[in-house]
Structures are given as C-alpha cells and as structure tokens.
Length: 630
Image (tube, rainbow, N blue to C red; front, top):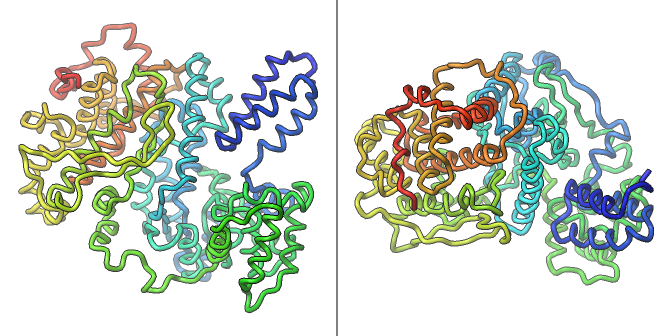
C-alpha cells in the first residue's frame, strides 16, 4: 500500500498522524524522531509503532465496552415517561463539561465561529423537550479547577491543534474540505456559554468541595436519579442505580442516545463493586497517569487482553472491609514500578484515586469554604470576582489565535490591561493587602501556557464602589451606581472613554460589542470595515433582519476573517466578564452577538464593494472610528 510513496511523503504522513494524536509535545517529538530514523529501513515497523504509540495516554474503556456489548440504545423521552410511573419528576443529572459535545456536531459551523443564536435555540429546545416530558434537570459544573501541569499540558496541546488548523485554513480549501480534514481535531467553541441556557431549565450546581464527577455521582445516587448524562468513563466505576447516558451520542432531534451498561462491565471483568476503584486506578485515570502505568500494564499482554488480566490481578488482592491495607498498597506500587524508583507521591495518587470513586459526602468540617469570607460570591456566580479577591489564577484560554504573526495584534497584550484594570476595581479598597492579579495564560508563540502575576491598574479619576455595593441586588443601589459603573466599564476599555458620557446613548445590548470593537481598534487588531460589519451583524441579530436557519455556509473562509471571528469572541467574553464584575444586569452582557455564516458571507462581499449605505442603522454607535492606537 505504501511502497509507491517517497520517504519525503512518508514523513508527511507521519506528521499528519502525529498531529491527530493526544500525545504530549515531548512524547510526540520523541516518537517523531524514532519514526524518522526507521523510515528508510523498515516501513512496516514504522507503521506498527505509530499505530500502537499514537494511542498512548488514552484509556480504551469506551472501546472495550463497545466490543463487549456494553452499550444499548435508549429513547430518552420514553425512559422519562416510563419512570414517571414511579416518581413525579424523574431526575436527570447532567455533566456540564459534556454539553459542548452535544451541540458541536456541525463542524463547518464551528469553523465559521458558530451561529450563537441557532445553538441557543437548539439547546433551549432540547432541554424543554426533556422537561416537557416530565424530567427534572440538574446541571453540575466544576468549580475546583486547579492550575497544574495537566492543565498547562492540555492547553499547550490545544494550541498545537489550533495552529495545525490555522495552517489548513491558510491554504484556503473549501469549507467542506476543511471541516472533513479537521473533523476530529476541531475544538469546541467554549465562548458559547451553555450554562446560561442550562439555568433556564433546571438547577445549576457548582462543585466546590469535591471533584465534579464525584460530587455529581453522589448527588445522582442520593436523589435516586433516572440517569446521568456525561461522556466520562469514570462514571462506569461509581456505584449507583442510575442509567448512564452517553452525551456524545445524543441525537437532539430524535432524543435517542447510547447508554453504558455498568453491570456488563462488572460481569465481564468478574469483579465486585469495591474492587472496581482499584481496577480503574491501575488502568490509569486523572490521579494515576497512564504513562506511569505503561510498563506495568504491558506485562498483562496486548491491549485486547490487559483489562481482563488486570482484573485477574485485582481479584487476588486481599480486601478487608472492602479496603486495602497499607502493606498491600505498597506491594502494589512496588510491582507497578518494578525496576523503577517509586515516586514519593505515588502512595497519595493511589489512595486519592480509590477514594475518588467512593460516594461519601464530605463532612461539614472538611468543606473548603467554611470560614471563607468570599464564599458567598460563588453562590451568586461571581466566579471572576472570587478568583481575583482570593488570588486564584484567572484563566485566559484562547481559541484560534495565531501568535506567530502580529497581523491581529498580540492576544495577551489586548486582554492583559482589561484584566489588570478589572483587578484594580476589585482590589481598590484592599490595596494594603495586595496589588496584583494572577493569570493562567499563554503570552506568545514560543512560550508555554503558564501562571504569571501582573500588577493591578487602579483608577485615579474615579472611585469604585465597595464590593458590597458593587454586587448589590437592591434596585435603588443599582440605579444610584449605574452611571459610575458604566464609567468604570469605559475606563477598563480605554482612558480615552472615561469622560465620554455620550457613549451611554448606545443601547445596553450593544455596549459590550462597541467596547470590544473599540479595544480591538485601539490595539490595531481590526479594520474599520471589519468593526462595522461585526456591529451591523449584532444589530441585525437583535432585529431579526435575516433568517439564521436559511443563512448558507460560506464556500470558503478568508484566513484573516477566520482569525478575526475568534479574536472578537474571546475579547467580547472578557468585556462581558467586566460587566459581571461591576454588577451590571444581563441586558449589558448578552450572549455574544455573532453569526459565523453571516459574518463570512458578508465579509467576502464587503472586501470588494463600498457599503457605506449599510451604516445608517449603526452610525451613532461607531465610537471606535476615532480610537487612538496604543
């Protein structure tokens, strides 16, 4: 099959497959070096090694379940109606991190930057059909995110995938060709705030004291849920009589999906429930990394046998009251690290992993937020305010920004002043305690994602209200502070807007858009006609000028427009965060007013025609025309 390829072409094939794997950058480089050395001598061994090692770091439990009849098809609506015979409102507990997969199946639209209103309607319709059938919905969101090596490695790997896709877009293929080529590597558009839509249809819970998966499983078991909706195979290990519906297989139109059968896994492995946590730990999970276990697992034979033989090993381990004693744990670790030094953290990794699968609610004494003076901020979803005041890293993820070129500026330099000024507002009355903010961010192409500290920028011409007034829900307090809050918002965007009270004539729904465009103009990231186009689309969306469902896909994507679409969305997200920090109501921070199909279709027209006549409806809001470059 490969004998007609030149060595140069084979290297290209190797590179393409490597880019599609989930290996770390270092492992990918090492594998690439090994494979390149072998290309001239033994093509067969190259391909075998590539196919085997490309899967490193991936636990094959999903595939194992498929091969062993561990899935069955469910009609979600029918299951809810059946359950109503026994309970008035059958409970569905939904893992928020799985939702993006459900609504990201249209890869062409994702590359356009998404149709936000179309996705919102799809989400609303899906949840409404579930609740109309009689279900109670509870959504779980992870509030325990920690900046660690794993988070940094994940973000670096995502950036590498983005660069690969950007290179593909630069070749200007048709949109369909690009979507087909990058189908498996296109990232979800996390600028679409699904949690805002979820809250309209059910209870929204932020897990703070436990890892989200464990907290969700405890809740589902305690309240006798009908099903858990997720794409996480960890839920196969948790005890609980709820069904396990796979989020990635949900058909939102037919309301059908695949469900895991936990009992099939138990029977196939021949294990008792207390043994499953040990088995999962030794198979590799987020506590005990797969790379640490590869030498140990390789002794159990080929991949299609290792789960069975690992189960045989676990069955032989002595349990007392369903638990392993310390001597047994140390003997397990000695075998795992045979002929290797056992890391000092390995014992804790093992114990934490096994404990993770236990469905024990945390005691009151162990809960993290007891005595935390800012804990109430989490209850009101002031997550950014909480992270800044408690000096937790403020996460700044990026989506399709190309740090290799300065054509659209430098993303870090665009948003860092926004965050520094936002921190200055919150820390203004706490200057004696701290005058900086911690960010988790990537600052340039060559530097890894990292945690950095930057000085807060404090306002001098205007005094921010104290925190209690800033977030007050009292209507009189909100009304009395509105002018000052809007002035602070303008100041965060630019000193030049501090005293431009005429800006307040912009309707609240468009203020965030205009401030975003002003900041992008000031940084030289966007041209006037591009800013006009984005503002016009925002206005058209609010007026329902066009039928979103009939807006065709563009034939191909302009590389600059592709980058610009995502820069706008990311910076808009930060401007909306400022509005939330200032306690401004939701009318000032609506969902991102963007439609990817419309933007790219009109961009291609506007680059070749004079369209000043289109500006009449937005003429009074184009404050960015006079933005001074920084």
